[in-house]
Image (cartoon, rainbow, N blue to C red; front, side, top):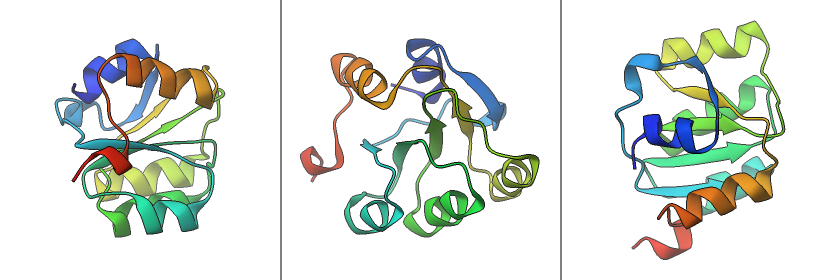
Length: 117
């Protein structure tokens, strides 16, 4: 499933990285704890989070994540979006809560980091 398909599934808006929506994540992670993201995500994962500060971009860069979906209608500030643009990390936002977003992705065939070897 590509980021473009995920965008449609989650009724999400693209904040930056429209040209990168054909990327396919290898796994998915939903977390508001950046320490858990650093400890448990796999490379090329997509992160779903409610955190909107610039540290989430830095964490995505360090963990080699392919993008971030902000849940619950959260939107990062312009400086964070600009940092993601520079780092080529696609950002999306959805009004859906974390639970429903993860559920829709799982039902659509997505697998979490613990299921990917």
